[in-house]
Length: 181
Image (cartoon, rainbow, N blue to C red):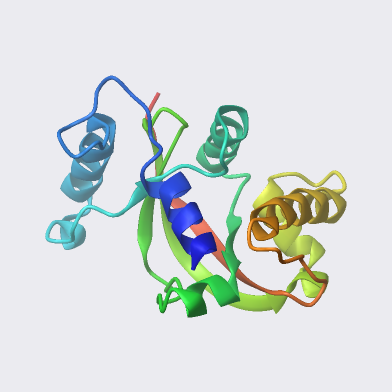
């Protein structure tokens, strides 16, 4: 339970910007959604999707947002399957849209989930690693190191350690509305 709360806090509530509305969401998020729904009338009645940034620090969040914007990043690792179970939370669903922001909360792109998998850590493919890391240079090695380090640090708080068999929730997505420069 602690893991999902930590992840939600990092993802949902950590946007930092001077152009926030009363509820803490940057105005650019509303503007991007408005522009998207104006051009895609079939989504006009849909609610504003969740907005968040990747990772837990400014450098990585901005780098990953830019990789998403450029279309190089097309996947993410949502977390441990057990976190969803402990929180009694639904897994991500195909078709869900999200607004990816930079670390400051500025809207960068709208993504749509295209595929969800639950796979043990040791069975994550090179293909997923390439899509998640946005690179073709040693993607699986980089993915394993980055994700092992992350899970190790978060799990340590509860006296747990990661295992090669821990079940992960993986998402593949498509960038359907990039920020216009």
